[in-house]
Length: 303
Image 1 (tube, rainbow, N blue to C red):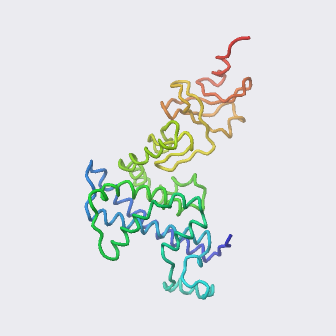
Image 2: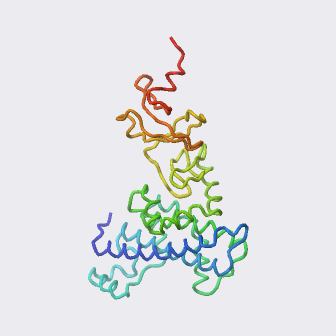
Image 3: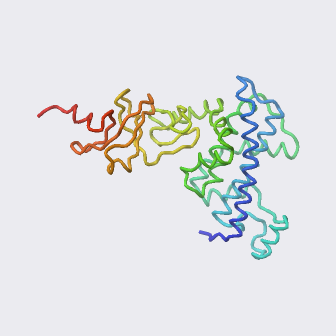
């Protein structure tokens, strides 16, 4: 593991801040027009959203790799330059970086888990961006439809993981809110084409798709305990049967239930609020409307 210097952290923070500029612009472009019903983006908006999203992505990847492998990992001729020269070139804006393709290959080695989100999802996007900045890309109507959800997915699930991947993933929603503003974040994770796309992904990774506590959309996986729309995670939560709708959908704090008489609980299916407590008799966690009423013990056959 590379020991990252204070100077390299300064560079990584600067590159991340630059990525955030394009992240905000891409997100603002996406949400400024709403869904527009069934209409596709026009050529101009498709061009702008693609360029901003790809720039946010490339800069986020560079920032991630600097934190993971050091600044030398992303610059050209790194073996022929001293630390002092590298810093001087950075200050003078003359430091030359490797190609995006090289950084993609390094990501696969440096962080295979992060690369799983990355692989394949951005290849088509990258090709379109290259055409845009070097010549021209004519988006057909299907491209302009697909861009509505593709760009939102890349911004929320890939760019954010690269930008904030050095932190606890539970913080992703809060960091995104601060980066985008709460209003833009809320509009982005509720952008109808994105929600339609992400709901299908949630269905593929769930027994039962539930309502997210954070964004209140039906995009929370009962298996992975995370929201596929806003990336909210509840790693310390568990799901138990709801006393109201009888679905295994009541979420509560599993870590603290044994040291409290009860903890607040809420059904992610019917939204009923209740209490969860650990029964000392049957030793099961149960959701109920009264903390001294274990639904499992009360249903047991008398001896």
